[in-house]
Every structure is written in C-alpha cells, then in structure tokens.
Amino acid sequence: TPGHGLRGMGERAAALGGRCTAGPVDGGFEVCVELPIEGEA
Image (cartoon, rainbow, N blue to C red; front, side, top):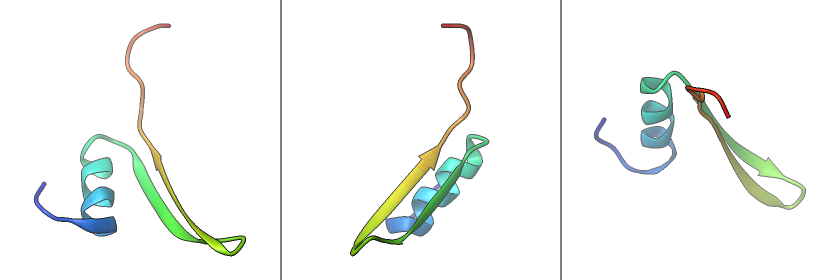
C-alpha cells in the first residue's frame, strides 16, 4: 500500500488484518499497531 505517515501505517496494518491507532496521550503522542500472529509459539 503506498503512502506515508499515520494514514499509510493504518492502511498497511488493515491490509494485514490488523489496526493502527494514534493520538495524544499524557502530554505526548502514542502510535499503537496491532497485527495478527500466525502459527504457534
């Protein structure tokens, strides 16, 4: 997926079945990416 920045990160995460959230937290900024894991540990 082409793109830069937070929107591109969200698009790439969604393409892999995950999600990306970002926003202000406690005087800073947080980016969280969750991706599914395949296989067993």
